[in-house]
Image (cartoon, rainbow, N blue to C red; front, side):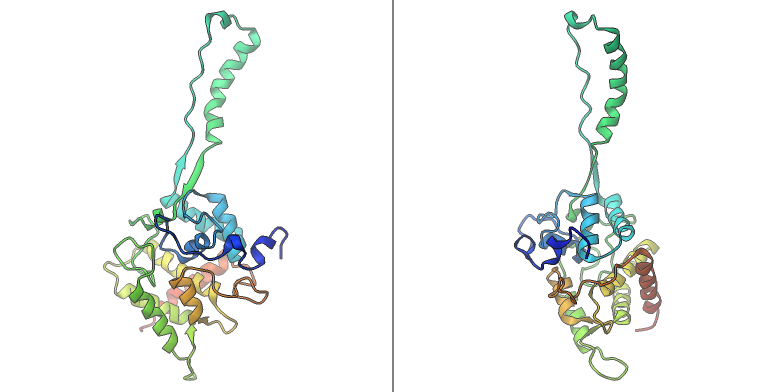
Length: 280
């Protein structure tokens, strides 16, 4: 366990207790981000989140590598974030009594004028409200194949019927030996995704297909047990309640033991895509 990580690893401390979003809170279609807000690892209001703040928290809480965290943050901030900077203040005019400046001041003034835009640029703020991620469009993240969010509309909370469909399937699906799995393996998640694609109002673009594959893969990577099955209870807590599943911070708990990196996430997403092509 790395240094400085104790505040995250001691379990659900008072500052990180699960609390549902309050009226007026900003939430996204992503349970991972909403869980961070619901536990207070980022703003509980879900507003004014900064790029590096989110990146570091995802690394610490979800045990993903910095390259993957940066990629995920960039996807949200580039498509839905906002950049702001303080206005450039005009140079103050000097009174006639001060107009007879020394040669040093006459040299410094042009340099100050040149540097003022640069110093303002260094104070640029790149922020994101979770609710901005509900924006739809060809270049946005929100798509019509979410496992628990309805198609064609903005959504910040799981749809009760879609959630029930996922949990019901997880409770009844059986393995090759005929025994109940009591959860979903990667193939089951891929098949649920395929069903959502078939019911989508419009075909998914290639960008949205890749986003959906990645989301399904990360659900499995984050929540799977030693048998590579995501238990039904974890699905309920993660997708339904949008909180970290019970035992997340335990020594042998839910949180991934080995950091999930960019190449591993890409490989798992590709597996979801291949499995989703198999007829239901």
